Length: 364
Image 1 (cartoon, rainbow, N blue to C red):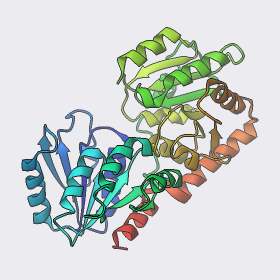
Image 2: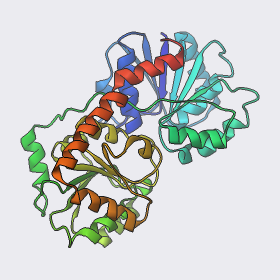
Image 3: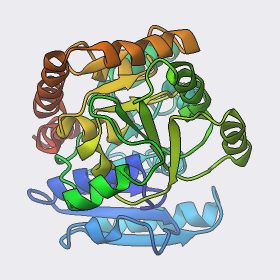
């Protein structure tokens, strides 16, 4: 076995989605293994999406950072003798970093799947040990994230490789998707249908979205936005209910939420932290423009050819960005759709991304 990916779970999530698609693509040409450290939700997971040629080992650990677990992991990797061990997310990162001290003939790679802020403390701890071991290659999703890593930890080894996926094709039929949009008190108006995908939590910054939409409700009565995702932080969900924005509707968690982009005019991202979210790539692949805040990797993904970026995280700025889209002539919106699909084909299709990873592994 030549390539082993290590991840915490295979629950529904952006990093997990990417890992499965990357592993599947690599399995066309190489032997691939997948180590899942913790328990995976038995109902909502990507296990059924993993290629049957990939050997999956679920360790089902319930605790973190135990010596017994490190020994178990060490023996498993020793049995497989991979050329590459590729870590994803925080818990796997620590185990793979520890492993890199002992198995010197293996290539160790780590993908930073989110913003630099989410990794600053973790990378800082490792940076202090770089004189003992600096073998791990850190993959940043965008140039902006790499610049932040480079400024804070200049001695680390790093490279830029963007996220990648297969183009998203809706699992639901068009009638079902239309029924979803027509199920809210406001009638969807072509040109003014926005979709936000992501759980209600701090870094998604839905309060900014709610206040921005509220300020536009009177001037643009046809504007509506639907948020799809669960309630991770109940206090934030309560705060959104208190704001009671008349043109923002909460649909709750739903599988294959990107399906609903088929009838959306734009994906809207109000986050205060982001890496390169998979939903943004799904939108591009479907020809859906993106309206976003200028955070993390979004400033690299979105440009004047495929969407709009607000100047900052203030309500006035985000409101203006939404309004700029609403005022945009239809031919300009159609041009953004074409630009979105072109950006996906040029940069984010999983085959091209896999090729870049193979070069970073030294297996091209």
